[in-house]
Image (tube, rainbow over all chains, first blue to last red; front, side, top):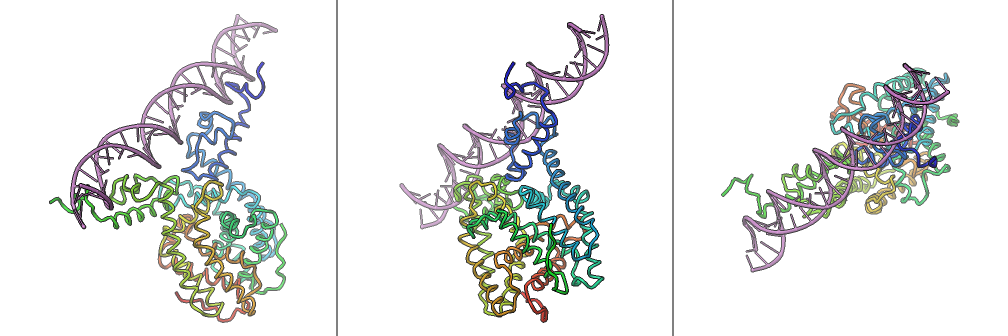
Length: 225
Length: 225
DNA sequence: GTAATCTAACTAACCGTTTAATTAGTTATA
DNA sequence: TATAACTAATTAAACGGTTAGTTAGATTAC
């Protein structure tokens, strides 16, 4: 009887899509506003759904945030893991990893802010989901990258860097650009998220890592994605 | 008549110290909770002052946050500027800058979280103080560091890096460790903010930068602070 | 006495969460 | 096969706690 748009009241509608819409909206909201700044009302509105439905599918705000974290990190680690699994020389595996990590973030500009939010939340000592995330997602990848570093160092390809700190620095270089994009926008005048600028940044990141890690500076071509 | 602790009601008390106490408490609160999570009540309580006094000295939450940003960034840039003004070789000036930046953050563990918060706020498109901060503090230092890079490249001491991207990467390496400290704490088991670990990180940062920038790898001693 | 400093109490809005109702499919039953 | 009973999806409305911001007045230095 009614139009398709209006007749959703009480209808069983599209449950799977409703849930997905809520999650997508939550990713955007948490990413833009942070956890304390995110508004359930706003998420519901963006998902074109009643606020109570958010609570129907997700226990509370914290649980919804947890679901968002899982969504973000599972995608990220899946992508990186795939890049790491190819068996290449240590050099190319490192560049491959860095490139994949960079590309994933570049393709999902909302994610780095969520990661930063969660990193920062842990500092306050309050209840955090970070421990779960770390165990579930980080540990494995961290171990894999560290192993590649060890191989490269043993074979004499790499400088004898501290694995822990080197990985930290790589992640920093890969990530930071996207968080600080707003500052650059008005300090340089150009849009740092344009394809062209992102490509430049990608080259700079791989160059930086290669220069800092590889012993012989020949053949610094950088891995293609 | 009353004890010193209790007799602050209505008294003219210590206005300068009251204001300073509010600012200090605000730095801590904004750093731990972020801007949306920060509570004026909590700040007032920590400063041992009535909430209305916060509004007496600072217009509103946003203005208080602005004062916090000024406090943080003026200290940071003063410290870095001093390190940059010494006239040394390009190599030592870069290492000097990086060391000073690192040391300042290490000595003020609450600051990096505030910086990150502000960086992230800008992404949402909402009203931001970042533009003011950038003009007032960043531009000058950015220009100085870029100039040193240009000198080093011209003299053949440095690789021909893109200044903009290289500075971004340096800041990333210097900063990131402190934001991600919580993750490391439980992934490694050791406290990353201990003097010993911070010193290790400092060495790793300077080594990373030197390796990525300097052409000849001789004399990589690193600048003392 | 008057201007600067400070407080207790208040309010208006907001926001996370709950409740109860409503509708659309599904299954059981006559 | 029609329909009654049941379940899942969804909403409108309200509740209760919290919080940014206000007001009116108290106290004291000058």
